[in-house]
Image (cartoon, rainbow, N blue to C red; front, side, top):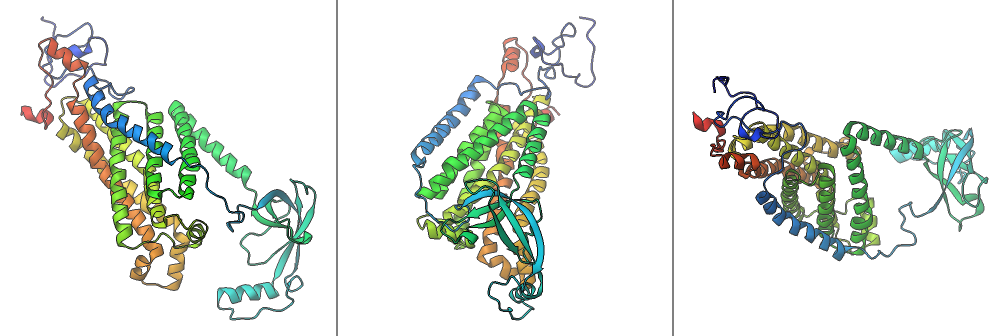
Length: 469
């Protein structure tokens, strides 16, 4: 055929269509591509399906795992933990909605219940607070109950000048009701009613996700709701019931991972590889976390919250609860890394199917290094931001770095951060290697069609095109 155009370099790859796997564009050219004509997309939609053989191999691994997760959910599903009448947490009291109607300034000395002027060293926090309450100006707020059987009833609330929350006229608040107290003390302000700003922020978040993500954004929101349901209906009640926190966290996290990944990214081999990479990384986090939490003798009982939980439910393994928190906290970041790495390998393969698994791995790991550098920094700063008040206390006390780092309260956060970061770093080479092995071992229809037509298959050596040189 005399009209065939010769290319000194490989010609542009054709868009996938019927017959594109024969190595030429529709209506022109000839089958003389010698390994550079192939019909693959370039990120214009979902990845091409892998061969049936690979689908069977992946299914043989993931179906038993999914079945084990379902069995774990059924076996550990809580029947209901015994509740305490009064936990002391503050959330078990009867609450109503109320509005601040009047706020006036009064002398703190005039409303001091004891009638005595507090004294003490004003250089301390307690002494300064006592002095402010004795000589400062307080606020006397009149609060109207808006809901419940006492709707319309008013009561008085005294706000000290050093309190962090100052009441303002017209402000919506939450009040606690104690029926056993004297009538004038039955109601007290416990919090601000922030339902409207929280609902508005949630609505803006959902709208942004749907507008940008479209159908995938909708599925992501559904997966997020299911994740909260698993946490609320399974993980928390099962731990309170006395089940091993680590086992509960593993089963619950696995269920969240399977639901979220497949719902957001589709039931495909690419998603399955991301699931496998996430699973292996979670196992590593669990092993390292268990080892170092035990070695460092971390009890998990370091503050008022954990102390209260241990007092109310002594059977809960607090160190296991700490490890469960590490696993659940690492899951969200791991999903992001494994899905990104798997997608990168798939797109590299789509762009150059002749690249072998070593070439795919090297290209993917270069992408992963950039991802590691940014995500690890994000993870550490997230933990540091959450512990900022604690870090400020240590700074005020002028404690040495060694003393701070080896205290149990800070050591827990260090172990949590470093174990999660190690699992995060390990997920990059693990997932990249799995994805490279899967796509390079695949023999899709285009390759089989070339073989049936007696044409040479694209080079699949470990070094890709470099083997030809």
